[in-house]
Amino acid sequence: MLRVEQLAVSYGIIPAVHDVSLTVNEKEIVSLIGANGAGKTTTLNAISGVLPIRSGRVFFDGQELTGAGSHRIVERGLIQIPEERHLFPDMSVAENLEMGAFSAEARHLARRTLAWVHELFPRLHERRSQLAGTLSGGEQQMLAIGRGLMARPKLLMLDEPSLGLAPLIVDDLFRIMVEINRSDVAILLVEQNAAQALETSHRAYVMENGRITLAGEAQALLEDEQVRAAYLGI
Amino acid sequence: MAARLGKEFMATVSLQLIIGGILQGGIYALAAFGLSLIFGVSNILNLAHGEFLMLGAMVSFLVYTGTELSPFVTALGLIPLFFAVGSLFERGLIRPLSGRPDHMRLVASILVTLGASIAIEDFASFAFGPNEKALAYTLPSFQVGPIIVSTIRLAGLAFILVLTLALHTFLKRTYQGRAIVATTQSRRGAMLVGVNIQRVANLSFGIGAILAALAGVFFVIMFPVTPYVGLPLTLKYLCIIVLGGLGSLFGTLLGGLVLGLVEILVAYYSPHWSETSAFIILVLILLIRPQGLFGRFSG
Ligand SMILES: Nc1ncnc2c1ncn2[C@@H]1O[C@H](COP(=O)(O)OP(=O)(O)O)[C@@H](O)[C@H]1O
Ligand SMILES: [Mg+2]
Image (cartoon, rainbow over all chains, first blue to last red):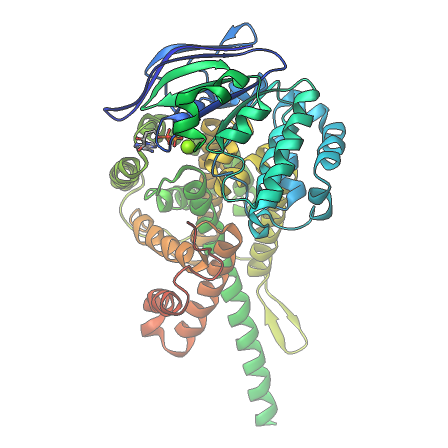
């Protein structure tokens, strides 16, 4: 469904990501794990069209999306939930969700999607008239995901959704991610919390210094000595 | 008897003052709102913004002297005209700067728009002459009890009110309007929900130019205009935006109103200080509330 071929991205003249190739198939959960600064966020930003691609190609759902504007990429159903959330702070929760359904197709389905989002995150329904900027960290993350779902994603790219959240909320988030995936949404998950990410995923990639260094079944990586030592702290 | 007359006189004067202040504030608010919108959407400081006002004033002056058409009617015609002007301005001068890192873009935009501002002034001076233009449009005043009310000022206020409501409805209810507001709150967030931010930037320049040009129509009814009023006004709008809080559209509106009222009141009691009061207020507010009246400290 998503195929990235030999992606390279740089900030000015400083290269950040080289030769990254990865795929996500339909209905899959795939993790991208790696230390801080490995290039995970940069990779996602390039795929979603927020950062320019230096070289390489991106295919999604049978079409090439390399260099397409971010709004075109969103229209196709490839949605990123960014690490910093980037909510609309002075809009209410409800308005943020409405904005999520901005592209034409999502607009038509907005009402039905909203019911689904409220079902997944009852909290968002309770807080619907509150300004996004005044939500707690956990609620903001729920809203970021909810807003992404409003766009009717075929593939959801989540960038460190558990960052800074209490363990109980993190467990909740992982459970909800699995539930979203059951509704036929493929997921590309970037996580520092490698253990939980691998347990939830079908496959995974390991990134180091801007390159993919290891790839495979999540279960196999969980048992890999190198991965255990470097990312699972075992 | 004398005391009663004095009281009536004061009532008339203070009401006139307040209406004049609100009108002046409304004119400021309109133009500053456009600048704020452009800045919020594109992170571009449009130093040519006051030139749109000057051009709007010049066009309504020319139309009025040529045809005696009411400036309020001309104002309607300015809407599509200046939408095109603002939109072309973005297309030709601002869009080529996109793709640069943000801080470089800000500096480049200052240079480009300052250059454009000077060029537009020169062009206007060449085309319309460098002398002052005053539009002698009046409507009969009327009297309510002891108070004399200027019809033209009331009409101006009504026009500005309707315009503000229309703008509010556009920003709140339409998809394009919401996309603009969303982009001012989070550019990246807007990109990630599928907003075409290049189109939104273009739209905000079009709307910003309309607002400035319409402010120009009212401006030329109240004050004489030269081709050189643009840049000083732009500076004043910048004060208003900072006063209201950078990034707060509502704050800009309120900041404009406050400044207009204060200037008119100060001008009445102590004309010498009127022009300076904008800057004094700005400094005072920023000392007390560095983020402006309605601004947030954003991380
Ligand atoms: N905006 C930026 N400008 C310059 N360098 C950046 C920027 N963002 C990230 N980098 C650099 O790119 C590399 C990869 O960063 P990032 O993709 O954020 O890693 P990760 O998400 O895996 O923590 C790091 O060396 C980081 O310092
Ligand atoms: Mg990151």
